[in-house]
Image 1 (cartoon, rainbow, N blue to C red):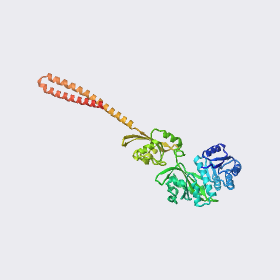
Image 2 (cartoon, rainbow, N blue to C red):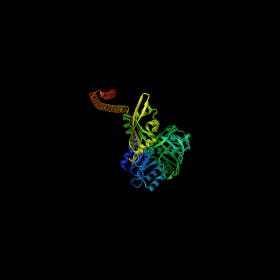
Image 3 (cartoon, helix red, strand yellow):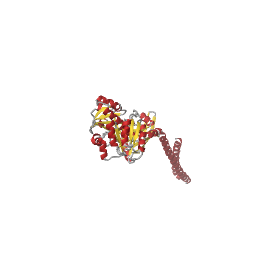
Image 4 (cartoon, rainbow, N blue to C red):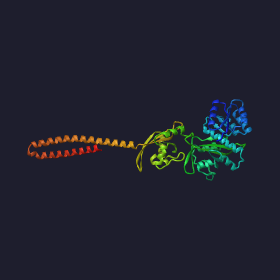
Length: 458
């Protein structure tokens, strides 16, 4: 990105300072900041910035809409409106001036960058090109992001080189196909958004429209990726009629703002976890993982590649669980732990998988599942040995208790045998029976002693 110059027109000093800092961080040059509409018009003529960021509500005789109209007509400089709120009458006035963008406060770096870059692109197309397809293609290929141009109904007309590289599609593959259909884009309330934001001339202010959260964009290879989607309406000159729709696709990465929120610091934290760890989004896509998780996927035969691949593609469903299981965890909003044994050529490993639902932005619903996977083979083996030892101890105790009972019985038998012998020869048969019983009891005692010795050796 070059050092394009920006003129800020904002009468709130703190907001202007924060805006300047953000713009400079994005690589732009801020050439000035004006507080009044009249001063903004004079500075625009003197400084000739590449883009003017104009607050609609300004103090003084001239508001931002009137100043923008004068700047556009006098100096042909693209103007992007900034506002926290506007009534219908103010919005209608703003639309009639055909601004190059319309940002609602508060906005983030991505919204700001997307609006500025789109405004610069539309300005090139409008004023520096003859309108030939070749020249338009050259213009959109100069844009760093993936740009898709459609007709007013959303049917694809052009792709720039970055869009072809990112998605794998050539123009011949998707030309004439509706954007959402061609790339399998799924957006909640999509049809309503298309109707209100892409087609209706009521929203034809040329503004950049950023879709909420992230979307999933299909690639020709069969995979998909998470991305931010912004659209801009390109109008015919001197008309409110929509001529084209420009769709800017920005891949979701750990350093961008997205549905995981605070992702940059989270990525470093996850990397430091000494066990395989990942975070799967509500739709099953893996949006965050550490190297140990990647190694586990490779060990199980499923390398992790691409942006936000489905969890069931990188790990066997028999190991990690089905999509329905993940939906149950999110619906119940309760942590779950399961153990899975995996047999490798070198032996078996037992894994404990902890599924932890992570709340969404509202705090009322879960949006993703954190997965903490631990090798608990040693712990499991130790536990089983402990359980076996306890069982053997119980068996030994039972055997010793049995020996005590047998000894008591033997004592009674020997006493009965002695009494029989004392009574004379007539009772010898009874005495012999008691002797046989004593021998039987002694045999049982030997069996108990053998069992105790067996347990002791184990």
